[in-house]
Image (cartoon, rainbow, N blue to C red; front, side, top):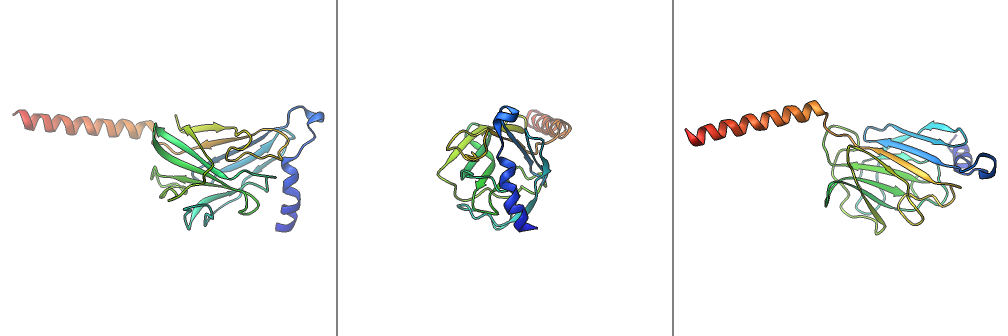
Length: 190
């Protein structure tokens, strides 16, 4: 089965653009191992994942790794998601030589998801930075950027969902901080 998948899956990225207009690929992943692959030719599939060793620079011995179904000419590199300027919360790593092409998801938010753990200790020289925003980021790399697939026949867009604390958790945390500050103030001024 693995040999058949290796022969067939590169064809999932290739398309006849004249017949259907602009060909595109959409890949969505999250910190929990939920990944999905679809293209404009109507192909839809869950992305297989595992906790595997990351062969990239400074990679973890066990990291959330999605198999990208053998993308032709995947460009290696690291996509950094920033919580705020200069503060990296997630690293999305593209490894072209691992299982025919893989995406490794690292997160440091420690919310109990599969991707949670330390970030890599070293990085690819090819890097790109995006603000994380509300927890979901859309990334369409161009030639030479991490995750670009030169043989795809059209753009590949990655939708990356990073776990963020629920609003009710943030409200509870904020209420607790206000209570602590109020109690400290009363103690200081009484």
